[in-house]
Image (cartoon, rainbow, N blue to C red; front, side):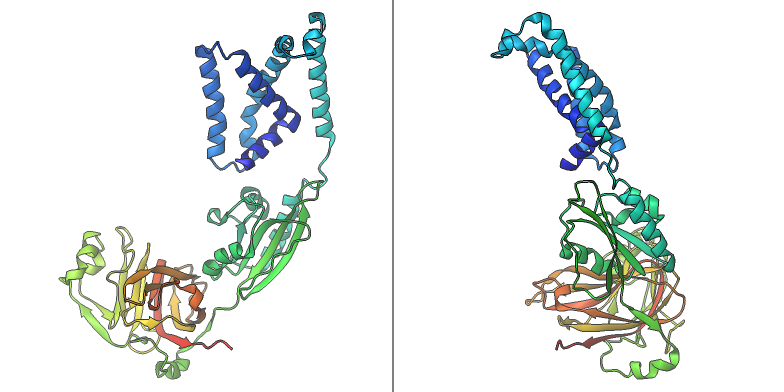
Length: 436
């Protein structure tokens, strides 16, 4: 609500905003006994207009420009009728009525002078968004997949001046943004882009630091207005390298590793018949792939896990188009589908490693089914989001820490969640990590 009022005042100027509030109080007072149909039409219209703009997310002060019309009416109304209450106010009642017109004119001239003075107070920092946008636009030339995480409430203008658009990455407009707020957004999404620009409002002496790995640097800092109470800061965050090129010649040692999850090389397969009792839901959702016989990796399951909605065109199988060996896990979909390893692991600190090949721009995630000490299901949580940037086979190496899981969980099942596209997975390992 405060943000809306501030944007309204930018449209009307503070002198006009104050005058309008006084006029509304005066109108209610003078018409308290004359609430006819016209009174209710005007009142309801004003309340609806203001409430609507408080309810929606105003991204620009121009959305409040319609208030100029009732402002003109109310300001004229105030100076025309304000003298009617003079007779009820001590000392003012002593003013002779012949001076009333001059009083109204004087008040109007005073308000106009205030507006002119306000207008002449030029904001030397009004171009803080174009300046910041130009710096980001120049910097982003060196990257292929940039995005802006906006915590400053100027997402539309920043998108315009930088040419980087992503509607889903505009967050809280609060001036107070804590490092933990930024980290909560960066952690699950940082591997979807090769650079993330984080926009925040900060005090002049403030500078945010993060505890997560990666390169974090302040690249732009501009005051927002002449008061110099807030700066519009832009940070650049580049993610650590999560994957590296891989060749089949390097796979022999990994396949014999004791850290492979159960059937992590996907060489053991199970044939699933079309009449399998747990395929009913898939067939009900018109997923035609599951109407025929197919193979799944032994000890891996697609049953009892989220997604596989109607229209996802889901396909999951043990494919002979393997990254290495005879089989790899293939997942294809235009919507969310998932496959998880059935045996549980203790919640601990791990390095997750796996090979992946897929269509460029395919999105997938690492997730977990979690269970408490009594073996009861505690919940499903996405640990990190990923994207395929190259058609080559890559080795992913990601850290999974205790704090990434739900507090009540003691065991988990590793799950691969495909958002959209096609991927092939192989040689999935969970390597215990001991903190020094």
